[in-house]
Structures are given as structure tokens and as C-alpha cells.
Amino acid sequence: MCHSTFDEPGAFDEPAPTPGPCTTAIHGGLAPDPETGALVTPLVQSTTYVNEAVGLSKGHAYSRVSNPTVSALEAQLGAIEDAPPAVCFVTGLAAETALFLALLRQGDHAVLGDAIYGGTVRLFRQVLSGLGVESTFVDSSDPENVRHALRPNTRLVFIESPANPTMKLTDIAAVARIARGAGVPLAVDNTFLTPVIQRPLDLGADVCVYSTTKHIEGHSTAIGGSVVSRDEALLERVRFIRKCTGGIQAAFQAWLTVRGVKTLPLRLRQHSENALKVARALRANPHVAAVNYPGLDDFPQRELAERQHRGGLHGGLLSFEVAGGTEAAVRVLNGVRLCSLVEHLGSVETLITHPVTMTHADVPREQRLAVGITDGLIRLSVGLEEPEDVIADLERAIAEAHRGVPGGCAAREEESEVTPCVIR
Image 1 (cartoon, one colour):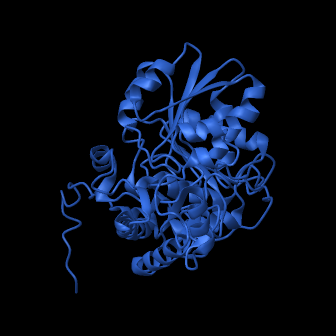
Image 2 (tube, rainbow, N blue to C red):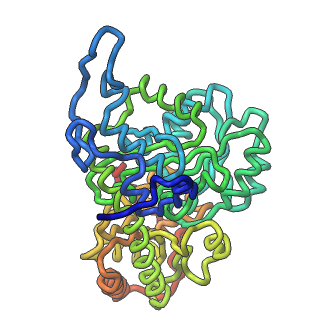
Image 3 (cartoon, rainbow, N blue to C red):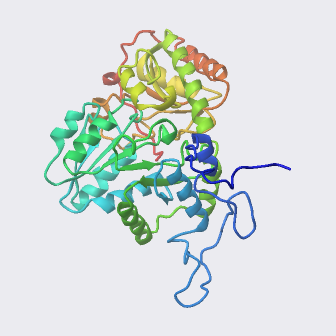
């Protein structure tokens, strides 16, 4: 018989240890189904729910407002950031839109980092501007630029770190102090690193926004987005906006994402280790003109990366330019075999992207060039294959791209402009 002292006085006086990231990702916010005991979160594929009586329900009424499977994902995402349940959306852009509608009105102003996802730029320049919302894009890698851009009518600061696709970092804690001093909320797009590697809320940010389509789900099977905050009043406002606009995530997409989150810490660790090996190999390639990855020793913001990113990890994203400019870059993009040419990131497969014709096709050319998004820039989302296989694929494509092409770095952005394709 097993004897225990659990019933003795003081047996539970010691506080329980804080669960680690893997434990939290697997168990945080989740519990076996109370009706059946099912270990895996059930998929509730129902549009509506029967009331027990007039005015008496079991917590859900209609799946445009809430759904049990979506609620499970929201609790899980909140738990991994020590926050209340998140608010989940059909896409990352839907999450951003709801946040902006919750915080901004006609006549308000927002300060945004100048190197952020192209869809966010498009949303401000082509949609919110028509509703009377002003915006200023600044190089947020210098926090003083954010301070100088603030106005009396500024109601939001929005940044992304690392920036997409240049990998430029912003000191989140420094910007948070500036925003808080002005009474303005700070929102951070943390899609690239997720809370496994970077925790903006712990650094002073008020809101985190995610495209859960990317690393959080991790398998290219479910589109979604989320807003995470420790400000419950803000979350309720965002939830109300979602109810009014109908942007809730579908139950099946949420169910797939719940499953993906459970391996998120393991995947991010391997993505980071693989990306560092690939970045080092690219840097050593004589046909590569530049490599942008926070884990490299010569990365310009190396000290900030070490301070801001957790566990010595820096994520699976990098960008690079090959010698020979745009012509050579297009040859590389069209020449890879293992890497997949797509408008996506954060999957188990290695994905290669041409920002100018894909993710940032709608960003004005002048703004692109100002932040370093040249026509020849290539973004790489390093997957979970053996990194040696990814390196071999890239080196073969780069070598083939330079056959018959001058090897210098003179063919640059100003000499050529590619035509954006229609991918959105």
C-alpha cells in the first residue's frame, strides 16, 4: 500500500511549481470533456445550441458569438501568455481589424512600425484612412522615432518585431515605456516568434496579435488569428466587435489549431536551430550578398535579440539577398525543389517567398525601398526537415542561378522593378 503525508497539516503549504512551456502548451486552459471524458478537445460542429429554458443556456447560443471548440483554443492561447482567454478570429487580419475598430475612431491617429506585414499597411492606407483614421509609419527600431510621432490624438502604437521580412528588431520594452507614458496602448504583432520565444506582454505591451495560421497551428491546415491581452475590458470590447462583424474562427479550424499548439514549444526550438544552421551556410556562400537573422553573431541588433528573445532562440524566419540582384533572386526562387515557393510561413515544411510580389505587393515602392525590401530580397521560413537538405537545395538553386550571370552585387533595386503578381 502506498502511504502519503498529503493529509497531514502543512502538506500543501509549498506553492506548486510554475509549469514549463511544453506542459502549459499541452494542458493550459484545457481539460478532458466533462460529458464523455474525452482526452482530446471535442470538435463541436454546431451552429446553434438548445436552451434549457427561456433565458437559460449552457453558455453558448450561436456559433457566430461563441463555440465550445473555439473557446477551448482561446483558453489555451491565453494560458501560454499568463492572460485571460484570447479572442480568436477567422484570420490574423480579421483579428487586427477588430482590434483597430475597438481602439480607433474618426479623427484618431496611430503610429506604426515602417517594416510590418503588407496587409496591415494596406488596411491602414486603403481602408482605415477612408474612415478618417490617420497613421504615421516610423522606423521603430529607434524608440525615439515613436516618441516624436505621437500626437495628442494618437490612440494606438502598433509594431512588429522581428519585422517582416527584414528581421529588423524593435526594443519592445523601450517602446512600451514611451507609449505608456503617453497613455497610448501598445500592440505587437508577435506572429514570427510566438510567446515561446518572445513575450511582449511581459515586456510592457498591452496587446499581442497573431496570425495563428503560421507557427501556432504550424501545419498549413488552418487559417486563424487571435488577440491576447491582460486587459479584460479591452478583450470584451474586441469580443463585442467580433460579434458585430461576424469574424469568429470556424470550429474545425480552431480544433486543428488546438492540436498544433500542443507541439509549439518543441517546433519553435527546432525551427530556430535549423534556421541558424541555414543562415550560417548562406552567409558563407560567395553568391549571397546579405543574410538577415537575429541569431547570427554579426546581426546588427544582436544584443537586443539576446535580451528580448527567450532561451537563446530566434525563430525560423530569415531573409537574404543573392549577388546579381533581382534577376538572380528570381532564378533562385524558381529553381528550388525542396523549398516551396508560397505566400506563407511557420509551417513544418521549408517555405520560400518573394515579398515584393507576394506579402508586400500592395506596399508603395518608396516605402518598401526605405525599409530595405528590395526586389531581390528573399524570405525563408525554415521548416523541420534536416537543415542539411534545405542547405543543399538552396546552394544548388543559387549555383544554378549564377551560371552566366555576373557574380557581383551591382545589379540592385534601382536597376529593375518586377511586376507584382496577384497573390494576396
